[in-house]
Length: 52
Image 1 (spheres, rainbow, N blue to C red):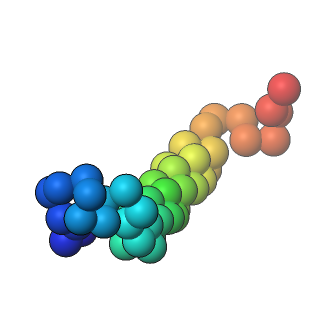
Image 2 (cartoon, one colour):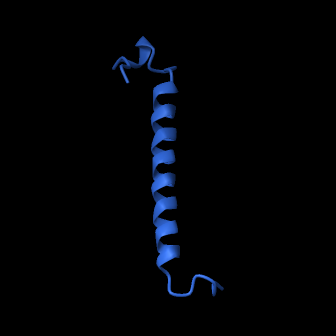
């Protein structure tokens, strides 16, 4: 993230924007993959209408 190694050179108050963007994009990708997997499993289930 391009942060200085020394705490007193500004690492105590870094810009968190790059990390937040990475985190949100990763979560969105994981959610999309989970949706595809869940949809796939639901469509393959033998009795899709008989859910508990």
